[in-house]
Image (cartoon, rainbow, N blue to C red; front, side, top):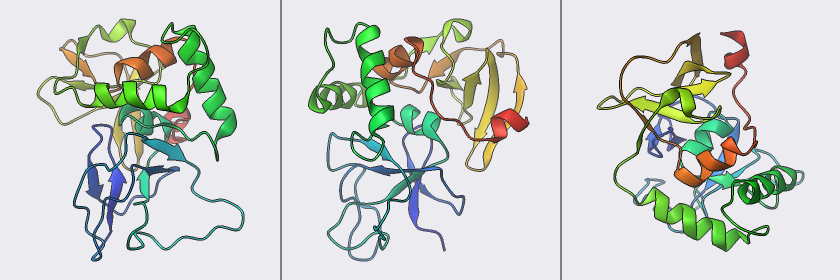
Length: 203
């Protein structure tokens, strides 16, 4: 039975067998039976590489942080995770620079500044209803009242799943809410290009 350590664009942690391109961290969320018992333990929600030279981890080691997995970076951003400043240093700096270009800070912000702001946005109970056409590439959207979600990429929508994305389609004529947090959507609009699963190009 798969562990409960995969994250969907809504930020929910679920148990599925699908693999992920990135690993995430919100602190230690599991108990000694490797059961997830909380949604987060830290404001620092980060997205990391899945392997690092000389490091081999046992998933959900008691007392250690819970390894979470995302289909791709667009999914991680939608769930409210930012690039790790250590193992993904170049991506973090690009994210940080786009944060400044978006007018969210006058100078490159410290991680605590970004984490505090993103924590407040993740705590909001309602996702904004948006004009799909005006949204930047890389955001993930969901029809109001639906559990389905779609990546916007090159002006078209691709249905999201843990296994990848469906064929491109024009935006639907129904109200859509943006799952990607406000500040991260602004960073995308300012030119940060997230990594997306290869199925986007194949669809």
